[in-house]
Length: 114
Image 1: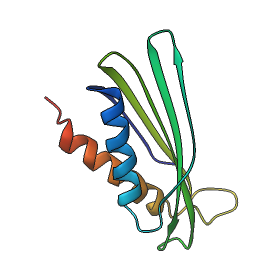
Image 2 (image 1 turned 120 degrees about the vertical axis):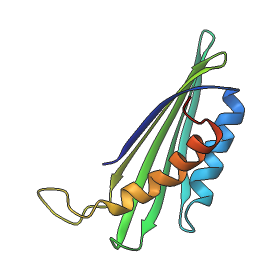
Image 3 (image 1 turned 90 degrees about the vertical axis):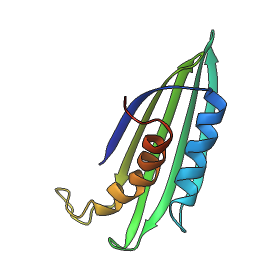
Image 4 (image 1 turned 90 degrees about the horizontal axis):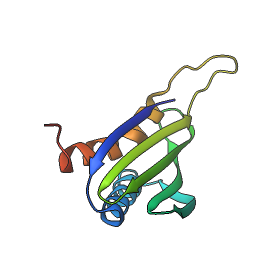
């Protein structure tokens, strides 16, 4: 499992589209699997699930991304799973890290730490 979380300031819809593009364009085998969008009062939440084939591991890896926000205050959480080849413990999680890195690099390029 690989995990990336970040507080952001920006337009919810624009950040969501940027994240979606970064994930899908980050791997030739990446695909959107399912998503959910909802509001609670003024707060918005979008959940997305992606999958890709990890050539190095020879298996499939999933990425769950959640973007939550109210106004321009946003919170992003992205977690990968799968990719391990062992039965009782995790080994070879490089595919998970690589899948997450496409999103992480784009976020950090557009929203550098100050």
